[in-house]
Length: 205
Image (cartoon, rainbow, N blue to C red):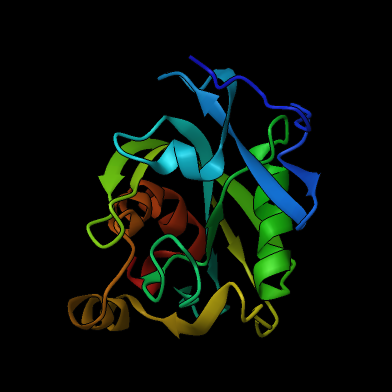
């Protein structure tokens, strides 16, 4: 069942401010979906990730430079979910009612200061990935996007601790050495057909 909104929520927004004597608290809403990706309601972000998790809409972005290298990000250490791990270029959740493509472009700019030269849909993938470190669960219906980037990233330090452009071989080495997000390989494998079409056979993806 969808959560019942408390006073101060507006279901058209993913973020609402509830005033209190101590200040303003931000409430972030996610869009709950069924197994076919149809919207069925909303839930507060953290509650949707508490075990066993509630299926919600998400997006993942994979951006490449003109040499066919993938832009990775290392999530900021202050993030409550999967801090300090490497992951794909950008991922997140659309506002309720926001198109996934719009959300992907918006969040890529917010986190990395980038406006992709090209951004194309690359399908969807549904998964259930617990995060062993936090105990949170990613039950997501994820919209995938691939694109090209022509500028250097300027990451928001509250969101991103580091970035790196990697070849497939460099990614394999880093993945064997460093911690990655629980969902990374699932979304990468699902996006590979579109990645190969974008980067060409010479890039090796």
